[in-house]
Length: 120
Image (cartoon, rainbow, N blue to C red; front, side, top):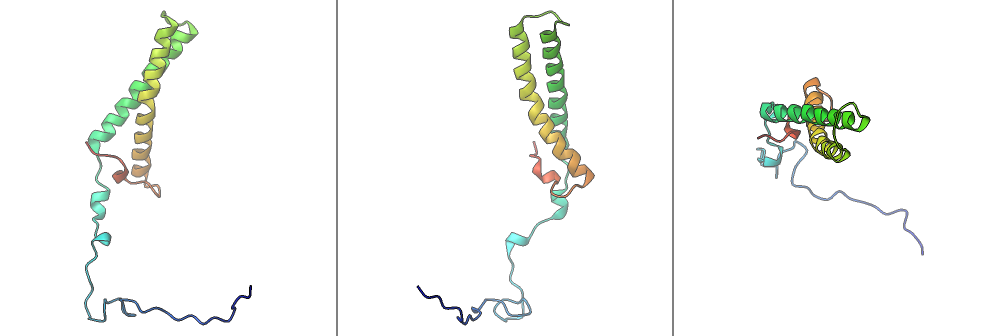
């Protein structure tokens, strides 16, 4: 099968001219996809951050209690240790995730902003 290497390509007509105006009419058209408020993206969701810090601290406490039960420093059955371990993991992970996003947003790291944290 032979290929055509000398094909000529032409530019398709667009709906904007070289000045960026639509249809050459001299005025710009409104496109809501590009209309955003930068201040709204950086609004700090304080309730969500407080909940994330609470979940992080509660998860750490439950994980420490499970560790103390498993090592014998605290009285308790191993089933209590497993229950505290599961509850600790279930509270620690979302708390750590949201707190990390809030910290990196506060520090101004690229790719992180407060809009990634859901507001309550």
